[in-house]
Image (cartoon, rainbow, N blue to C red):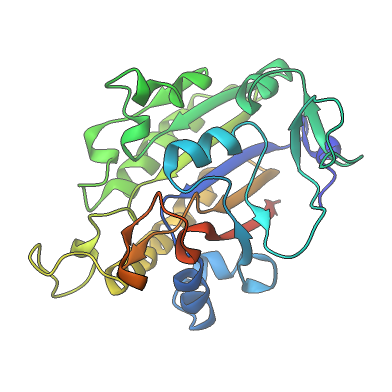
Length: 266
């Protein structure tokens, strides 16, 4: 575990949530060499197997933005990187950065960070009160229709916006950036060569979407200022017919098990 008390204040922070990414698909593609950008940065080139704190985007992100990142799948106790001050917490250790606020963006703002959210799925679209809860945690938030699930080029569009944000950030101001990547979320059939709307989404199109994402993430990481502490993970998985299930917000293994990685860009 990184000592986050040595990180906060001296590093920018980047949290990339690959919305809906399944652990089994992510692990298979990494082992096959089909996601070289991520494999080149993840420790050992592999994903850590973890359990999500929520089975759909809103629940998982609300928990993560309170410091409850996906939990290692093995027996605990498992100590946290970030934690709001809470008497009796058993997941807070010397290396945990604690904050006196209801959520991580507010805590980091108190520590001098500029907090920015570039949203993807509908829970970030700011079109309704519910769609405003997560982005309203940040000092600056962005969402456009071309960042959403229906645009095949949503991630490049999002990275264009990240470039604008980073480009105007004062040199001496630390940044906390959340990028919620919508490309893996259904619909994703258009990422699979030869697939049609009638063909629909599948485990194969989910994998094709991850290959697409990996091709663009290098540009994102290249935009970040050094040093930067990076967390890349899924918020939850999704089912493609396993045991008769489709989608998420259900208690199935493919939903609860997510890939997780953390590293420092130096």
